[in-house]
Length: 320
Image 1 (cartoon, rainbow, N blue to C red):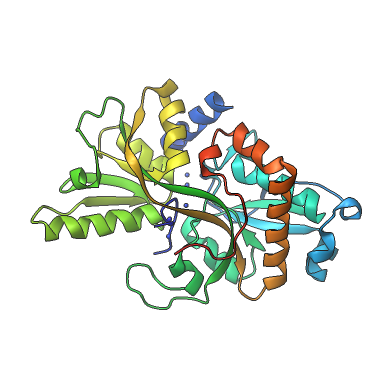
Image 2 (cartoon, rainbow, N blue to C red):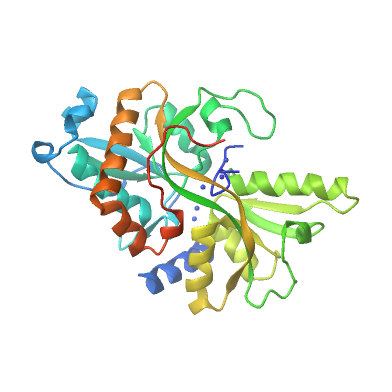
């Protein structure tokens, strides 16, 4: 997203010429997600199993193949985004560190966020790393809106914590301070995310309080929603805190957006793994804990200025 409090719940922790310009501009200034297709690799980490300390923990077929295909919506800076034809960001850096522990490549493949879990369950991907919030609904394969069973669900290896933030135009011309200020107004955001769930819950609250519902506009990618906000066609975009902060700092040289209010419903990001693949899940947990212990994890958090979201231990299905 709730911890689809962060990006991305399922209905949950994003990609067009004008909209993409926002993410591209941020990319150039900086130092999710891309073309919205499942085809092709965006990048891969390369390592050798001969010197990898945790290679023996992997399932035999993955160890033999030497690669883990990673499903990701690669238009969500700074978590993952495209730069010079390669996936870069927090998740790709973490994947590089994990590859050294496990001795296999992590090969990022681009896809629409709300199709990623379906792709995982269809074996198009081995894991998902896409600023995906670990939520009970996703664990159980339940539609967050209806409560109905929609799939088998997935397991998560939790590696980061983030909440949802409210992003508004620079100067906050509409005076938005909290979710309550969104009643009766147009809000743009990426569909299939936890932010969408938060907005829908708030809209229900608005009507119960005798106010107008939120006019919610959802898009396949986050850059599309950001463009609507930049143009003044919406009053706010709900987004994961690190992504909102990144766009506030970089878009238009820091002159397009700002973050207002506190983080909402902070929860864990998780690496999603099929429930049938507990050996891979446990190997990933061991690898995340290893990079936390050896300091590689902390270096990555510091590089991207997201130490506030760092965890001290990788948990399994810690979301609620």
